[in-house]
Image (cartoon, rainbow over the protein chains, first blue to last red):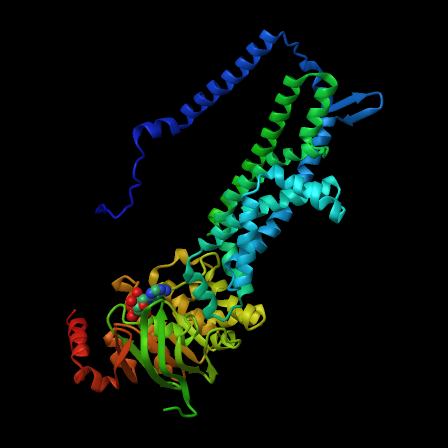
Length: 276
Length: 249
Ligand SMILES: Nc1ncnc2c1ncn2[C@@H]1O[C@H](COP(=O)(O)OP(=O)(O)O)[C@@H](O)[C@H]1O
Ligand SMILES: [Mg+2]
């Protein structure tokens, strides 16, 4: 029922949902869960008689010796992960846009190509796709492991991104197309000046999620020994046997990177929200 | 009948949405400078007809020639046609991410390839014409419905087309804003030269400016006559009933 004042009253979520969604309760739950994980790891390692050696970890970030300052292996691996993810993400964006535009086009062939591409990529496990790129396409097209990794990640996430872009484009009301057509714009002009600028704010939140996914799934290229963060972690452990310390550290590094990314983009989002 | 001065010539137009026939054997001829008002009950195909005229919808059978350009699905000339036919929509369809001035200049700059200075000077002239020169730097969401629709009219004017289509331009407006938009439209109509096809139920406006009244029902043109005749002596019962209903209310 519409209220007489004409102001829209947001329907309230059930009390229980609201209780669990409130910030203080979330923080408490988070602390309890993290505490549980850490304490069970601690107890487990004690039962195994694990010898903690945290003091040996920092040197994998950087060292400061007579030779001067030097980045450690983890820092170098992190840069490699960032580089790999960034290149793969750019490829995924371009590929995603092409696939989305084909899907939305009037061309029957274009739509067919994009649907087949999407179905194949979405129904293939990332690991299988990686093997395909490295062991099958690699020798044929002479791709080294690094290039094969970028192509694989780009194609895999390109499929996801094309769906994000398509949904964002479809979220722009049809009246905008009518308005743009009525002043004689070409399809390219409509996308460039009218539709894409308006769909960016629909696309940014899921694109952030996809960028975070990209960084996380880049770890998979460690199976073909590309020297990124996870591979480095494995190598250090095989040298030092500090599996607990190193895996915790690597996990925290991933967490920090993805958190910084999410927070950074939420600022950008706010910028797009006001210039409406 | 087609003459040198015919701007819009529709012959035996049919239009289907799937199996549903939205336009049935439409014949309509509009002369240069002629002002046609189309009315009829909701769902009678008024929007469909007017949207066919600038190729926003494609007709399935019959022939449609607008400003000497034949309109058909996949025509290469469709953009050239749209540059000669302005359109004002019920829901305004302004570009919300652009300022009023940018809404008015994006067509002239990107489509007509005019310089920014020239396009802006022109835009300000037309904002003056629709009585809102002071709103140039605002965004559409900051304007009232009546102001938004006047911006939409100015956007069409900026393209300097010879034909203007209006699809129920005042139906989405609060009553107190209808007049400010109608005034602008009367001014356009009376300044002459422009061919206008206007779907509206504003019969006061129709009486004042229309050269020809067209009544549509169930996808057909039922009547087409000069307003003197149309309002005093409607020939069909359907039209009489419609007018009675709309004029009482
Ligand atoms: N895109 C569409 N798809 C299917 N049916 C449509 C579509 N647009 C309009 N129609 C139908 O065509 C008929 C005429 O619609 P319309 O031209 O919008 O009528 P009016 O403008 O006179 O109210 C209506 O019955 C409507 O439901
Ligand atoms: Mg309509």
